[in-house]
Length: 402
Image (cartoon, rainbow, N blue to C red; front, side, top):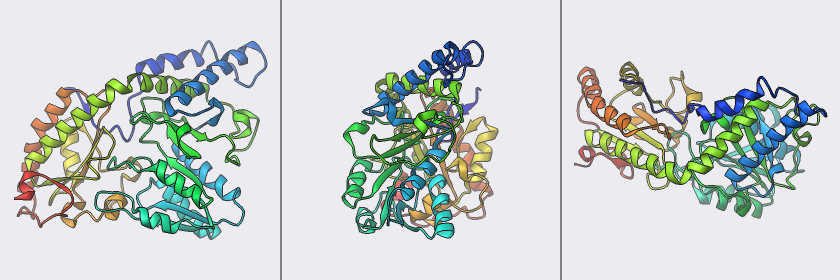
């Protein structure tokens, strides 16, 4: 049996076409994009083309609104810190309790080091933002609101277009961490009020170590990385040309295949989820009506997720407890805790995240193997009795609703 990879929210396989596009920029076209000679100008043209490809995928109005970075974390940090530096008299951040650590860790640091006031808005049992609390937190001291486009653990989508308009109504900037959303949902940034957006290449079949920050024309910006004149002086340092070219190619492939790939991925995800829920004693987490097409987070009652992952891994199946950035932590997911997932299921959540590489054979294989894995674990579990009632508004398996 070939290995089955269902952890695409952690990272994706770099597309062979992306690798092929990158290779010449290690050997033949190795010039510095900032150099004035032919070696440099040839490479600079490739960087510009990559910028245009990303512009097209994002629906940005101008290609110069794309600033290349090392990835989503750098882009997140640059957006937040720049907003604080450029909004006089405003020392508050509005964000959510379920953001990626790239936002939450920075917010915690800013509270301790600079006295910044951080409002962490809660979510309901399906991971949906408390809009009234968000509206109430915005005010004359808000420098920036930062809300993810899609949650990395549950796939729940947030109404960032509406939230951006609300932030502007309070005179604040708006940023969204769209690392999980880019390439998985259609975007048209020029039709929104979003000021800044973060993305990362390795989440859409591009290389690791490259990402971008969308910076709407006219948005005040202080660079996080200072140095030379690269990226219109918005991000110093010699350009990672192979990575930029790879990201541009990945964006091009995502845009070209979106209409065909996403319905197929969604259908596979739904078949996988239905099959797992039919096993019983488990529930689907998140907003199952409004989420990424590739993501399913299933909580297994009275079982430990780590034990399930161990047996899946031994069977050649890769999945995840949630965020790869939180792996190794013994604490339950901050996302699931914010959603008040029942204690009987909190430690038994497994995230399955698919991609355009996922096949129907992969799904069938998982559904054939998983029931036996769960049965063996339940036989060993000291709490093998029927689980306590779960949250009323979670999506349940047939057995849980009896």
